[in-house]
Image (cartoon, rainbow, N blue to C red; front, side, top):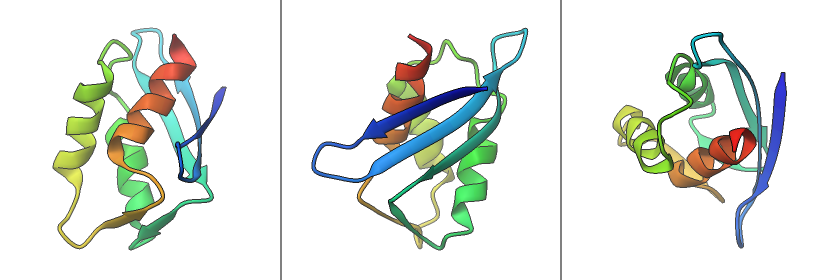
Length: 93
């Protein structure tokens, strides 16, 4: 299991745990931290969206995949989709 913590500049702490499969994809992604997400159930959607993605995607590609899954009613406080992408990419560099 890989663990990463990322402090968003002027924001919250994002923690991500994940594994990497033999074919270089994210597996068992779990995002947590001291941020706020409305509705909180959307965290499961984020985790599932990241599972199966190639570790070779860049930050912008990961951000765009996350953004495409966002419902207009989802609100993120203290972090953004690019922060999640930055955190996960920093863990594998």
